[in-house]
Image (cartoon, rainbow, N blue to C red; front, side, top):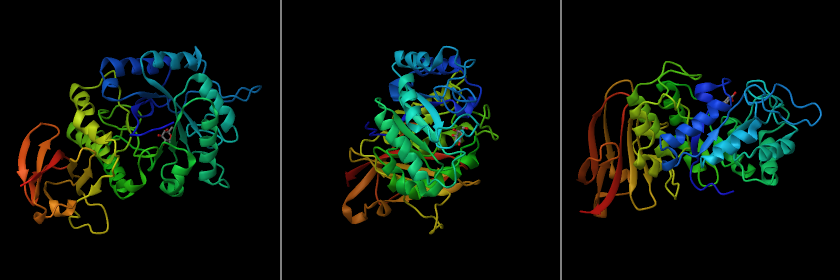
Length: 381
Ligand code: GAL
């Protein structure tokens, strides 16, 4: 299976956690289509933890869907999602139990992969709780990677071991198509800012067939749902979505699609941000300015990224709690003054053309936790 750009979709966990059932999933699929999210690339509908009975079937040893939550089984759910033109994702774990204490796939990897294929599953998120300590993570992820390759169906392998055991160093070798690189996200500015900052130096280890996954977005949750920790302002959600888009991490939505606000819908369907995220070359974003943090990732974060069509994505993120002056020196991007080139900046949110700039773009002050993001086009001056 080829996964050439970061996967996009929606996952149950952030909003619903254990409160999932057939109608929650099918309604999410309906909403993806009603809201036009499928038209801009969101395609996976993923059921996270808590979908099965507490124990395996004693005779077949298979994992069985919870008969109250999913009275018609999983194939019916998969068929419904497929009828909407979308893809169906499920969840398991490399340990003996899942994180929420349902059966895990440890020592049942090949049987479970076959079961997921029978359900009509297209995506498997694979967690890391209750893993026997004597087993190395790479071996267990390779087991499931092999099982999925042998199961007779194309199933995207979404590893979720939270960056443990230096995931980035070996995860590509397991067949995983994306890999969670951090602990869980919560719905607060501090949570998503810390996650993004921690991964800025790691994006050289992300690319086609295996993407660094900074977790499901909390954008638009406004402190409702399972991962609520105070919530964010709309301005902060803009910053989160822009960071995820520019950094080229999978765009898995986590907010409630029934109650989504119009401005959130506009944000998550921003065509320029999605184009950056889905850029065919999948080049990593890199920090342009160090701003007094030579050994780390600064809170005044300027990220740039080379795009396939010759343009650049440039984002200015003020992750500080106070106003900050922001600028970008083109020398840092490899465009010295003597190159004879300047950059023309177009704001991805407003469409405003800042004109052709030489040597640097001085943006002035950004309010706390906000961002500005541009497409920069090189032109001879
Ligand atoms: C965590 C995982 C979350 C969610 C949860 C389910 O380990 O990082 O994204 O899947 O388990 O219990």
